[in-house]
Length: 193
Image (tube, rainbow, N blue to C red; front, top):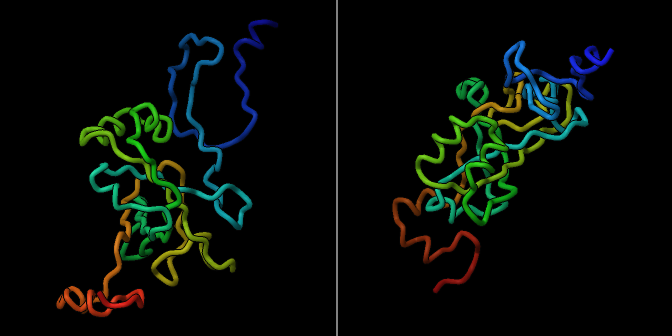
């Protein structure tokens, strides 16, 4: 009877197995991790499902990160999506770490030591958390807003790699051609110098 209870592994929640961390037949001790599970189970995520909405965790070099602020617009391209079909996800920067993230901190988010090493190759990055913008709740729209109006239904999953673009500054097109106009006619309606 002890062998039966000691060799049975049960979980309190369901989900999709992302990675096996142990081999069959390998001896385990109590508390050893044996697999990684995506608790969302690949079902519809987001506000309409009543589940915790997905967030994007991005890492940027501190030199580039000092211009990033909470509330900035973000555009996200998951690796599982074709940009020409779906466009980009729309989000907003919710949090920017004040200090560089440690390899252990990145490992806890990414769960992939090789990816952590690759990102850390350029130095310890700052961590950014991006919240995805919710779409209007109709049956035919995805749970999140995309830059393409009728984006195809795309399954978003935890752990997908993404390319992130942040809007750090907005300028009127004429300012690119005639930069001095920005000083004469501020976009925010402020007074001239």
